[in-house]
Image (cartoon, rainbow, N blue to C red):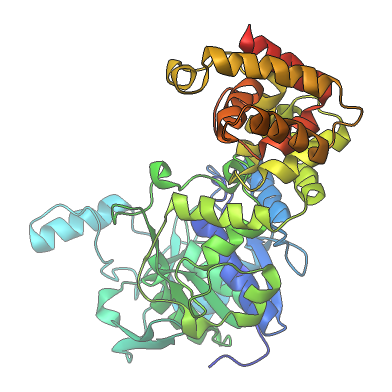
Length: 465
């Protein structure tokens, strides 16, 4: 059971773009803080100097800004805390809870070979330097001295329940590398303690790190947070999510025309549920979110379900709101140079038929340019000599209209159908072919009205030839 206060953080490394797995973890932390009136913070873990890039940091921050998941305080840059990390490590050495190790990897491998008759690829350190003195001027690392009076580390995972790890599965792991840089497990503990983090919610791949971090919290006399580990997101095949399955960056989802609230809605449902409800506003996610309803099983990413969710969110928006997103995502130009009034009217027509902003922009661009060809199948089905004659008569009727409103256009088409005793579809489908080159489109009367009198007549005449 979670009680206040709640202080959580998300801590990405700027070694790549923010992907949807990371965004979901950030979202769950943000929702936890918002639900309990707590604080959500962001820490950039950039101590991997070789792989950390400014371009990735910029991309990560742009992703959070677009999703409106910005932190409640200044962003913490881990590399600025290195002196603090080193000071805590030296204190642990002074207290006998850590020690300097002068062993090179080659020395460790050689001792392993002598003892077990096999070459070491990766294994537990044997504690060789734990009780040996050395010249501090020589290259060395600082290792944590595993407590000898502790058989196991046990913690109550917020999602998984009781987790127990035997200490003999661990070794005296490194806190400070030979170049003076802190290791992940050590820097995380010091930073989380200094940031007063109360709940650490992260991916299940961190479960092996948690016992090490708990031992460090205890050795440093830091207050221990509560831990919760989210199951991973799987692809449709049941394997770890790959780029082909949708593990692309958040920025790419924005470029593909997804709405931030729709993406967050979908990611929240990957492993969390509130009854059978599928569509949530941001406020509803905050209201209903609870750790107790996070599923222990891995969630399967379904691109079709994401697109459906995005389409539902689009249909709930006004045309003006969608236009603002097109402008924000620099997709307005893709729609072709429609006048403001027309593009708003067209968005209102097309938003019911598309699932992304990119699809919408593509459809409006096609409408603007007009059909280039009609398939032989559509010609055979809908364009007969008698139909062409009716289309010519329709152009005469449309040209006489003083007002090209939906109502007057509808009357003109239906009157012609009644006069020649034909079904509406026999005239409506050829009109669609003239306007958009296919038989699937928004309401044909609304489309004619928005396109305007001259453009509609021009396209019908071009179809008839």
